[in-house]
Image (tube, rainbow, N blue to C red; front, side, top):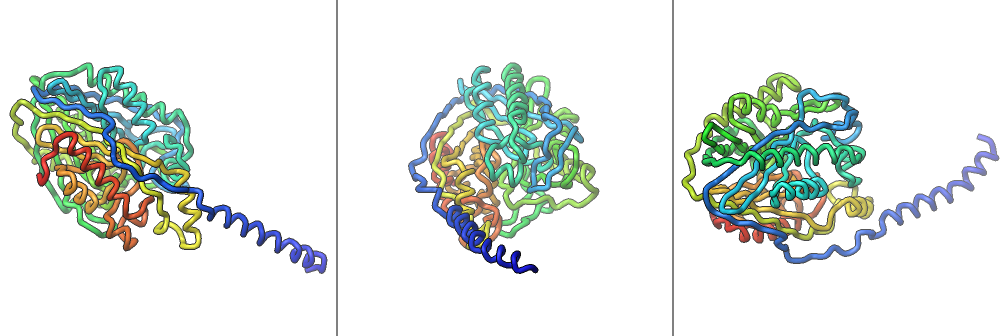
Length: 438
């Protein structure tokens, strides 16, 4: 090396170190500030009791191809078509003057933006209260979340066309469901097969419970709702086709056998994975869907006596300050917190829905089995649903978070997240009259 080059490098080195130090200091500055803590607030609620009416519809989603395949960190594939059509499925319920809509979307998750726009459109069709859930399909399309952390970790570059496609499909399904209301009876049944699922990260073990709700009209089933908990990750990464995975195939199988519109809803699936290895890719997803369909056939219920109670409440709660301590090395903790703060909402929504004997608590994220049980104990819910009306990431128990174990290694917030959501759950469950200890 020439003396000139050595001299130049010696001169440059202090500037490089100074620049790196300044960048580190800037990234480590506390840009998050103080996050306010406040009492959960009831945003809206409806209650009714009487004869039950229901309408249901499904509408194919129209992704803006070519579109990124969501579900995993980079590198991600880009899809120009679908293996099977993706759908929005909607159910509208009415009893005693109260009307509530439920939309199941074959997406990785939903956002507050999507939820707000769907509710705005639904209100024009006379459905003012709507629960929007995702099937948590890791092979659907992305581009609908503008937050940096979401773009990086799961959904890819934001594009308005993706949001428009989701809102259009969900809104059309709700409008068609609201236009097809008919008198129905309701049957609730359940069946379990613990061999279908396992815990991928320790903690409480999923029980393989499937709950089936049948809404039956004079001519046959109008709709059914299937609640089950397991990640929809049977379609391999790096495929250039979007795909609804096992939830979409399950719904299609049920609809082909005359069960009406079949809505799939995730339960506490944060640490629940599918224990089924027969076949590969789409074949494996179809095989598991057939297993679940057979299980659903055994989940027969008896008609609920009229009148049926229907109630829904939306509660807003403040979120704790993000905590990246389990996600990044210790020396980058401050920078990690800043990154999460820039992408995290300061408040979120927890909802409660009562439908006859069902008392459903919905969470905007991925509660683990343990977190779901804790929330059920706090609220009296019969079921805790995930991936609803927004997304704040994983939710594990405070013990798991403090130990840095389980799904807390992917959680964006510290141990107080469960406490905040639990407080909101108590308010929501009280607003709709959950039965404590049920």
